[in-house]
Length: 347
View 1: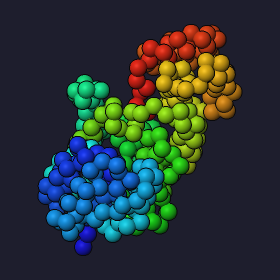
View 2 (view 1 turned 90 degrees about the vertical axis):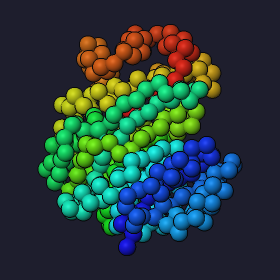
View 3 (view 1 turned 30 degrees about the horizontal axis):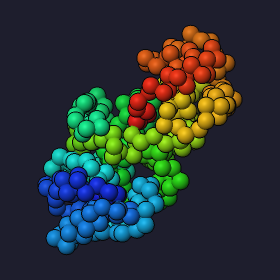
View 4 (view 1 turned 45 degrees about the horizontal axis):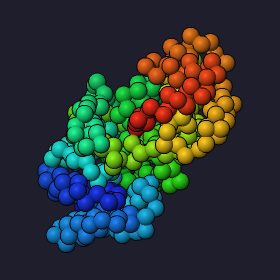
């Protein structure tokens, strides 16, 4: 019996791919399958996948034209046969007991989902380590529907439910509720959308605070670190999906500090994306887009609130961006954007 199917989209990762696959081969649990979805790689990644598959029958390779990580993950979901499904990026690594420990916990608790901690390692342009941070939750939890409702906002704030590679999902549960990735999203928020859909339907979720996964955030390689104008479009969809999740648990988002902070964070990021020097729009078009942001319905409550509340909600050092916008200094904001080297990779 295949206990866990691990889905790994692969694209132009010849430098890091062998280490990622080796960390699965070294798992203490042996009843797994690794589904490598080669998404049209143009380097040696395709050959590396085939070489590993030839050496271990538990490794399966699917070659497809380049369609993006979300479609690659959905392809893997179609082929998965394990009792639980996990995900892994092609440049990350994991602890040897990740599958065994968390599969057993999920099985013992009868949970559709188990989420565990990770260690974020952020690398700069020269691949030098610039940040190491543990992303987890403070306690071990077994949550029923009421528990998921009570912990929805704290779990979102902790970011333990923002990604998919730090968890296992019942294959039968995903298929019953037809949960897949939004394949039109290519900007790195697909994980969060997927997990909100999971929480809306889940009856039992386990939170394991131990860290098993090492998230290697390389500025020149990670999808979440790339500049994309499409992020601006996707902000509305993401926020509406979070609101849908809160409403499904009868959480009053209008009175939620978590919601206010989330909206402000996305608002500031949208402004910085427009102002970023990598944005190919003309200065006139950028100014028009900055003015347009204010009219978007998702920011209506924020824009009609007091200046003090807006700044309180932002809770970070980028309040200067909000001040420039509120006071109408759109060209000053563009100037700031010209010096803004890196878009903050993840919400």
